[in-house]
Amino acid sequence: MLLPKSVVHSDETLKEYWIMRLSDDSTAVMVPVKTGFSTADSIEILSPALSPQDRIILTGGYGLADGARITVSR
Image 1 (cartoon, rainbow, N blue to C red):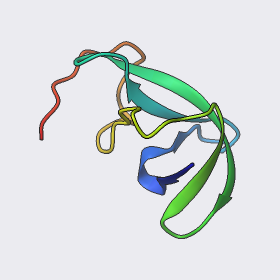
Image 2 (cartoon, rainbow, N blue to C red):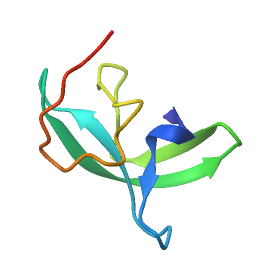
Image 3 (cartoon, rainbow, N blue to C red):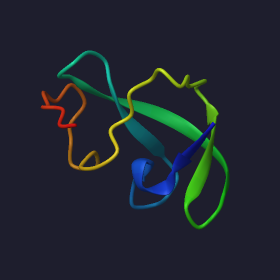
């Protein structure tokens, strides 16, 4: 699956990558990911397998703690 580069976060050493995903309507969870090829705008997620139904946090995810309570705006 390809995701926008802006939703994939990393540590300072660029060795660990993660995304923030909604586990329910108001809880963000950190999901470690393995990355593959990337372009200027997108990055390939090799694992875990993601589905189109997964709700990925697009903005503001870097500063969130695992299990953070959030409000979804549309």
